[in-house]
Image (cartoon, rainbow, N blue to C red; front, top):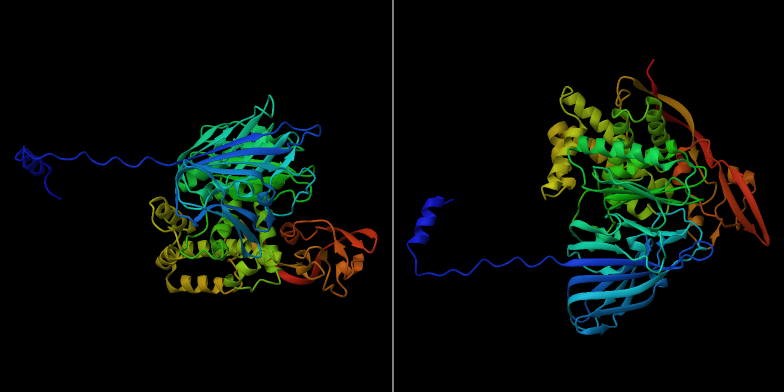
Amino acid sequence: MPDRRIALSLLAALPTLTFAPAAQAAPEPTLRVTLAPAKPDALQHVPYVDVTVVAEGMSRAEGAPLLRLPLVANTVVTSGAAITGLTVRDGNGALIPRIEDVEEDGSNRTRFWRAPRAVDGALTLRYRVPIDAAAPPLALPQYEMRTELGGFSAAGNAFLILPDDETPRRTSVKWDFSAYGPGGKGISSLGVGDATSRTALPAGKLASMYYMGGRPGTYPTDKDGFFAAWQGTPPFPMAPLMTWASDLHRYYGTFFGYAPPGFGVFGRTNQRNPGSGIGLTDSFAFTFNHTSKPADLRSLLAHEMLHAWVNSLESSMDAAGGLDRSWFGEGLAVHYQRLLPYRAGLISAEDFLADLNETAGRYYTNIKIAVPNADIPAGFWRDTRIRVLPYDRGSLYFAATDAAIRKASGGKRSLDDLVRTMLAERRAGRPMDEALYRRLLKADLGDEGIAAFEAMLKGGTVLPPSDAFGPQFRRVEKPLKRFDLGFAPASLLARPKIVKGLIPGSNAEAAGLRDGDEILNTFSQDGLQGDQAAFLSLEVKRGGEVLNLRYQPRGETVSAYQWEMAR
């Protein structure tokens, strides 16, 4: 690099030359979302929400993809097909985009709007999102628009029409309660009330945010940017649980060495599927009902908050939607969801073991335990036994890897060091991908570490050493029963859900279920798998009769690994 004094003297020797001023950086494009809910009806349901989206930096040739919104997102039917009154305008007037619906796979379908002519500049969309108050709650990701007790909530991918590009835009969310009436309050993943993103965000980040308006309960933003909102009436005081979550969020920031400037937690009722959760952009959403207890939700809160730090590996190929890499993001989240609260003194040793043994019991009794990682994307949304593998197998793999690194380094290094290095690479703008993981793993464990990793990906059974979780715990074997619906799981994917493949001698048959019965209710299977004592309640239609059946969805007994306090 030339000496600065020399450079200045050369400029002084050329007084007759003129220099053009440095070019100004192009202004950052913006995206503005305004949500205007209608007045609640007599049953305190919000009938619709009017949406306005103004997106700058929209340059498209005629026929190019312009806008997008999922019609089905990870098996969840969104509000896409129900939207009314859509108008689209740019600086040259109204546009009538051509609609194209694309089936991406069995779990996702997207509606695209193509430009009817050249578009350049800002685009303004206005439309109405009706809310069906009679729609039953889903045992699926909590994306869909719902209303109750004078409020509404949804993830962005269920109702926000957004630019079909990855252009980062400085984003703001504004709430308009003029039609709703007094007392309205709005919260999004960006924060409480009207809020603007701290950085420019691509459309995918907005689609992965949560939006809740009406009269939600709220937990005030603390000095670390943590906030919470909930729709419905919890069966327990929510503030103490959110204080616990805030304390854990602060500990996570200390452990990982940094924290997002803001993080939101959203809760809403779901009578059929309490205790489910979805990770979102700097936030997550969970469900509860009248039977929920704070202790039951702590593990969920711990897991989903981790996704503000621990996400899936990057890849140039994303045909599987990241599910082929979920062993990393979900496996680490399960590993740390029990370990970090335990280290922080926020859960007891008994709580730690209960969480660990639910994971271990589900994994070691899973008849699909040997399904290779490459086959997980195809079966993730079709078979709950495959869906839980990245969580269970991944977490136990990381426990085994942590133990191996500690042993190889004489206690000087651990998995924590490897993970922090990976996250630092991502923050520095470098790829956090499988290639990076392999390099770091080999540096710590050599070829043996790579061989163990490859075996895990191929479906090999993972078994952490007895003292993997500390000398205070030890591994034992116990007889546990496999999860078994008693009929073909594919029956639950059909519409209507007709029972097929009833297993002779199964608990389902003993309870009275028959081939040809139509299952009317929905239920979550993921939690059932980990609870040996759980019962499954089915509402079935047979001919003109509706029957209620109840049984334990369990099959053969196998020997499974568990952990207990060392004596």
